[in-house]
Image (cartoon, rainbow over all chains, first blue to last red; front, side, top):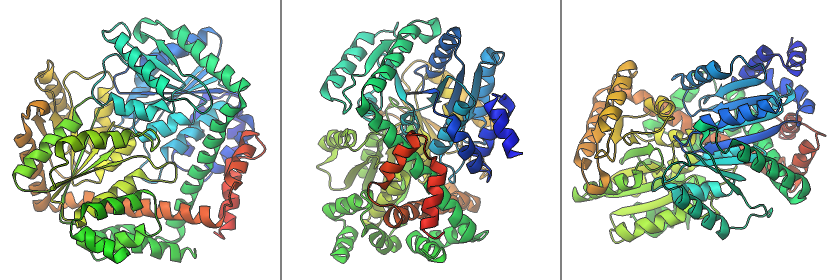
Length: 314
Length: 314
């Protein structure tokens, strides 16, 4: 059964791909062996991460970039990472809306990933979904996130090329956001660039980029777009291509890929260790009882964790 | 030394508090015993979480709410959680700017928390910092986040009262954000409510609140503010107080506190297990070598994790 699924993924069967991602999302026991099996088939796609403030127009930008690649005869997988919970249906809703415009194109696969509660590592699940799409043969894989929190930054960092989307005239938090995003952005997009304030935003950004030198020597490009009018998309695609070329010709750019691979090992390890602890050292209902004792101030969470560690024989 | 530090924290010595939070942030070995020792002294403060889109004016709102509480003779601890990395200095910058307006008041303690790389759980570190401020005797503790990612949602969820700040006329991602935030917001603030579109934003929000019934029966309040002009702050404080009263009189509201305590145990456990693995099963440089072998497609990360698990004897 598992082998059949793997075969079908490698044949780019969309139902098999969807099933495999669901297995990964749910932390199904067969997920690890599936990922192990497809791993040698991955590594061919270009993985692009897109993040930025809510309202910056990331979805439109990703849609237009997808159309651009489709016109070049390249297939595209999109993983949209949503901060909404599985209960709210936010992720599913997002899928549906997009499906209307692109569902008829077999060269595009769209999948939303939502939070999977405290047991899940969204970054790890996203990386796994990307591996599946990669093995399935999509040429470009775009990871799109909602929001600019640390989780999103972590997710986008796992891409080979990271794009940060800004809009002219953002609010007072912009300085702080930029500080956090400066290190991960290979390409900056100023979307909605027909709006007032675009010159100032670009000038601020350029000034900021002048302050800090990146370790790999790459100077992040700034591209102006109006995604809704399909303007600037080819410039964006060429900025992405330029950075890829830079990576190929500058071995120091590989340091980031190594750091990403390290982080992925750590994420899988973290997940696996927690699963083992929950399975072997914590009985049903026990966690809830412990939580009640913490609230009642009878116990503190640190000594509870020590007890769990001891039960595992560690 | 550790006992002296604990004593000084309980005496509300700001330098001792700052040192303890730094220890927690760095995952210092003495942090766990410190937290264990102060735990019985915590639980008295009211913990308020504030999240919302960048540019919504959260910082101003938190500042004005702090002044309101100070006028009532209550002390306030503020933990500002920043998505910026420790290298960018974003968090430190935030501290400095605020210090200018409130540093002369010994009844206010402000601390920024930044990401601590992949080994750190920012949510766990924030919870620990809140425990320290709680034990130090601050009456109100405000957790403020930048951004609306899952990490921020997780952090704000750990507060007793969660506030989501919106502004009139937000962008196209608002539906998705709302979906994710609907479940955690006990109070909605529409800040900058002197702007156009406030009626529509409130109407949309009210419609959305009408759709979903909360499990505990609480109907989230909507408060309009103009933080920069100090308008609506007393209404916000009274909405917060109202929800606290609701929690006191409705035992089902305790379910959330239990879920939070559970999550905290899980977070500490996850952290501890990873530390043990890194300490006992992974030698210096090993992780980097493994990462290189993953990039070279010689090994896959899943079999590497299996090897680590085996080394731990699990």
